[in-house]
Length: 180
Image 1 (cartoon, rainbow, N blue to C red):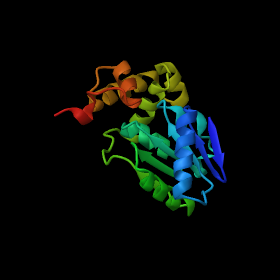
Image 2: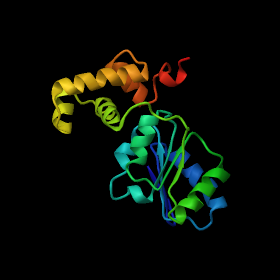
Image 3: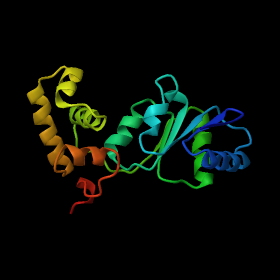
Image 4: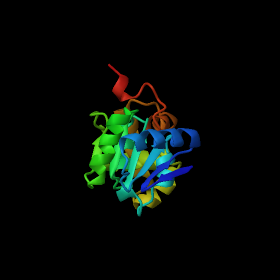
């Protein structure tokens, strides 16, 4: 569902929520910035809707705390990225900052323990690719993929591929962040 008013576009799978948010923001921002506000629900919706062409004018609001997921969203070249619900005043201020083309990221300070290459492996696994497909995509040997995934699982504190996928999509509660 796309709600438009002036230049602000709210992109959401929930039309009523989008309309309510648009009305509430209009009261705080009479002159909307030319931005697409993407409500990333269900998790992954932003990856389906933000294109390389639209990323520089897109602001994503997500509920997924996974640092690798947040980094992947940010690396699309988004104008803004925020984690968790924000007050309307906070959201309006973020949109004002984004209006002057200041990239804004308000996400948890938790850093991924993965290297960039390991993060690539996790992302491709989470998007459903098999090891052979990952090897082909990255131009590496299948054994390199297997070894890399073993390191990914160890660093994240997950038992295997399924738990790593759940971790990436923010659905695994016993990831490395929650272990003592």
